[in-house]
Every structure is written in C-alpha cells, then in structure tokens.
Image (cartoon, rainbow, N blue to C red; front, side, top):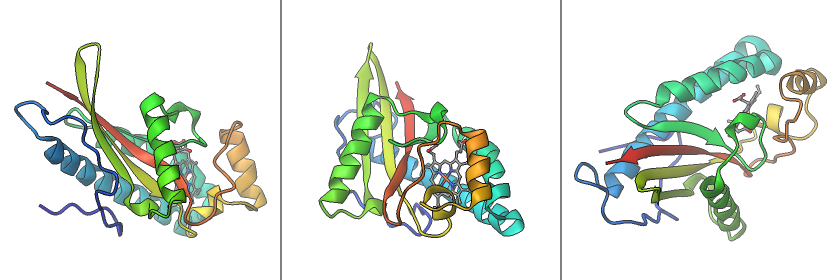
Length: 193
Ligand code: HEC
C-alpha cells in the first residue's frame, strides 16, 4: 500500500511502537500506516486551501481561511474513530494545546532535530493505556517552509498580517520561526478495543 504525505517521504526514524498487541483488528504497523494516510490527505487539503487563499486574496485573507478551514478540515479528517488535530509548543490557536504525551513527543522531535535529524521524517507511534482504556496515538512533525509559512509564522510580518493575527489570536506565540524549524505536529489518536 502506498501512502502519500505531500512531498514528504516517510521514514520510521523514531517510530517506536510500544506494545505488540493492538487487538484483533489491526496491528500497530497497520494503524501507523492508516495514520500516515490520514495525515497525508489532511496536509494536502490544508495546503491546497492555504495556497489557494493566498493566491486569491493574499495573506490577510488567507488568515481568515486558516482560522475557519483548518479546524473544519481537522474535524472532517476525524472519521472512523480517529481524532485528528494539529498542535505545537508555541501555539497560535490556544485551543490546540498539547497534552503531556504530545508535549513530550514535540520535545523529542526538537531533540532529534538538534541531533541532525530531518524534521520531515520525524514521527512517533505508541499504544497508551489509561484507566483500562487503550488508545493508539501517532504524531508527525510539521516542518516550516519558507513559502508560504513564513508570511504568517516568520519574523518581520507585514503590518496588516500582524494586525489581523493580533485581532484573532491576542495570545499568538507562533511567530519568529525560520525555514526548517519544527512548526508543530499532526496528532492523531484512536481508541482500541
Ligand atoms: C495566511 C497565514 C498563514 C500561513 C501562510 C500559514 N499559517 Fe499556519 N496558522 C495560521 C493560522 C491563522 C493558524 C491558527 C489556525 C486555527 O485557528 O486553528 C495557524 C496554525 C498553524 C498550526 C497549528 C498550531 C498552532 O500554532 O495553532 C500549524 C502546525 C501551522 N499553522 C503550520 C503552518 C505551516 C507548516 C505553514 C506553511 C506550510 C503555515 N502554517 C502557513 C496562519 C498561517
């Protein structure tokens, strides 16, 4: 089976599936493959909407699209028991704050990048159990590209972009990035039987 994630090649750099038994229906590897497929489709759609909106109306108009389209696309992608989100250590949308496992994973991604790993290849999959309930969890790092990301996540943002961001996200922490930085991650989770 082939799963496409935009132009990103997936590798199992830090894929550590923690438990061997994922229930009768799916192995951890099959779940990880499924997660990669969902991330690929989600990323393609987001990028399509974003680039289209930038072309049509410039970055200020595109901010409005991100503001409404990104959460909408995320909830559409959340089918078949999967919950699909984006998160970051430096948030723009504070509603997408990472939990403890996500924070730890993002810190691991930063450490791997500092050690020379390619951020486009960082992912983690694990089966977590709490209160007797098991969940498959998957994260994939989102690298920052010069285009189009820095128009809204870089330094020296255009004044109208700054003003619109300040209006929508008064507590915005997601600026000051450079190309190649880890902007955040896709984060998926699915309950297991
Ligand atoms: C037109 C402005 C704009 C551009 C260009 C842009 N973003 Fe964003 N980004 C936003 C907005 C607005 C949000 C908050 C969306 C929301 O409310 O959920 C956001 C949120 C995010 C988040 C979710 C975490 C958070 O901080 O809320 C990630 C990850 C992200 N962007 C990555 C990227 C990447 C990678 C690129 C380049 C491919 C990019 N963005 C380009 C405006 C932009």
